[in-house]
Image 1 (cartoon, rainbow, N blue to C red):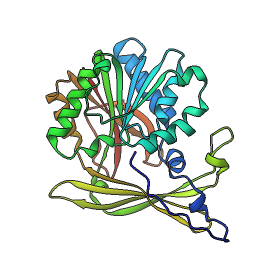
Image 2 (image 1 turned 135 degrees about the vertical axis):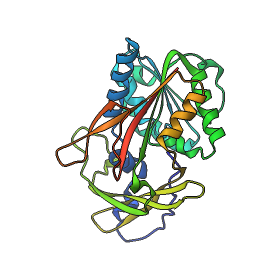
Image 3 (image 1 turned 120 degrees about the horizontal axis):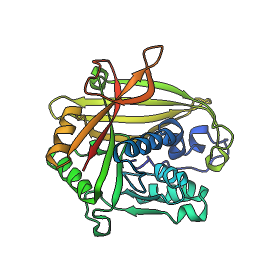
Image 4 (image 1 turned 90 degrees about the vertical axis):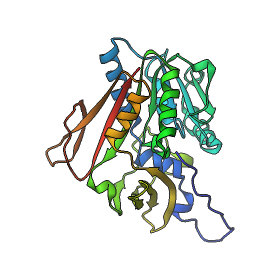
Length: 295
């Protein structure tokens, strides 16, 4: 998760707008992440393939460590390591996500401000699963850098360890557009930051694409009922990697087998949230899938 835009707050007698009161990380977690479903998928898939339950998980590009927190909640022996370069984002995760855990659960999370390309000798050969979700590995725009990352992950996995990622594509992935989605109030029992719990509109902005380099710039904005906006809350500069390319690089890095998990359709032709291993995808406007790689 990248740095958020910093807003200077000037003294004023006016009531702050909802955008001024909002926390971008809180909005992101409510609008983008579904850590329960994500952990369900990787946990069940690993168990089905390996015949045992995973214990040690690393969340790369972990941001606020929301997924790591979900992992240690699942079972009393689960351990999580979260890695991210941005110290303020990690501190936010400690203050707002780890703080909701029990003392025992917090003790089983190790957050590290680190580049995922850097060697951590204590992790070598120990991890059951590594997650690189929300297309975070697309930050690597050169093939050799992506290859180096996959090799680093493979070194850190246990002999039967697995890497899980997501990917998206379709002909809409090449278009410049803004997509809006209404986000309701958080349900009872869900955490809210500073008591802020208001509905808002999530705006996905595919801002620019360079077909020569493959560079894709995407932005996230949030709009609130009073008309105020949190613009450029998150900005991503990625390479639009093809799924076949990614699997080729994984194989070159030494992974024994890669698998794509394609999403099924609901009654209206949209995604139904059910992902199945397949070698046949649909040529559609947009798709999201999971990818696994086995050491």
